[in-house]
Length: 108
Image 1 (cartoon, one colour):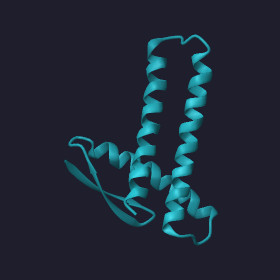
Image 2 (cartoon, one colour):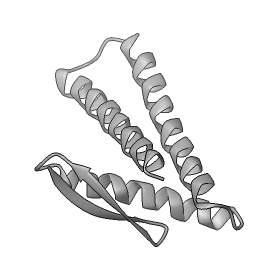
Image 3 (tube, helix red, strand yellow):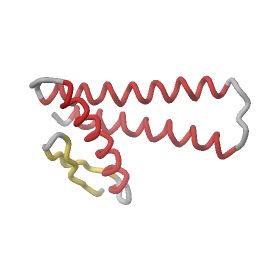
């Protein structure tokens, strides 16, 4: 099992992952960091737990919207297999983000 150290809001978190998934975890962490920076500009001083929970809510909202859009798209004929795969990949990526945030919150 591999381990990477991610940084969110200037704080480091060691994350265990499967071998070969290190780059993916780092990509997901960058998404979380982007959400953190967005929240930082809008919110005052809040606890770290609340901050991470708010990031999780933002990521969950992204996942919800992607699923809703995929559901709406599934009611229309998909024009090609590549488009269908793109939707599937996006949903899976968002699902992985949610799981990564959940792991972070559980480790607190």
